Image 1 (cartoon, rainbow, N blue to C red):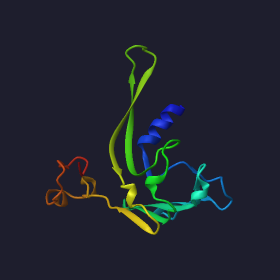
Image 2 (image 1 turned 90 degrees about the horizontal axis):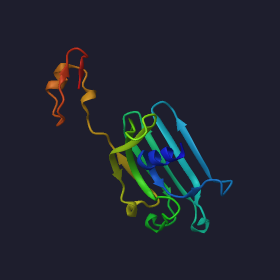
Image 3 (image 1 turned 60 degrees about the vertical axis):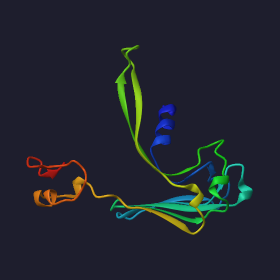
Image 4 (image 1 turned 90 degrees about the vertical axis):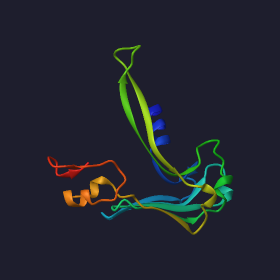
Amino acid sequence: GDVIHRMLTATQYIAPLMANFNPSYSRNSTVQYLDNGTVFVVQWDKVYLQGKEDLGSFTFQAALHSTGRIVFGYKEIPVPVLQISATQHPVKAGLSDAFMILNPSPDVPESRRRTIYEYHRVELDTSRISSLSAVEFTPLPTCLQHQSCETCVTSELTFNCSWCHVLQRYL
């Protein structure tokens, strides 16, 4: 339902800039995407804030690389992000992930209670977002990158992982 959608979008996002944008304000406003197999890019081009069109248009993008690297690029940010009102819509930038669990409701046996757990968030300092700037997120090494017992046992990762001979994977 709508409530679940709102709760998940509040906790699961890849957002170079989240605000109350109105892409339908101008014929020149577009939100486009490109996927070439190694990078997926979404670009918000000449979009305006709802009810604040006089502030000017914003142009920015998010690029998700197959290596796990994420780049936010800001071409045109006409006003400081801290001056954007969050009254109608949250204003934020960064990454967040969560998951949802359905549990039986103790009060009503045939219904289930939905619990959303946010397990990690990276919030950008929006005061540093400006025209012609960029932010790059580089993934940390993980256990799953190791493909042999030898690379596993010689790894300097700080995770509590070990080699599984049955699966032939580092877990």
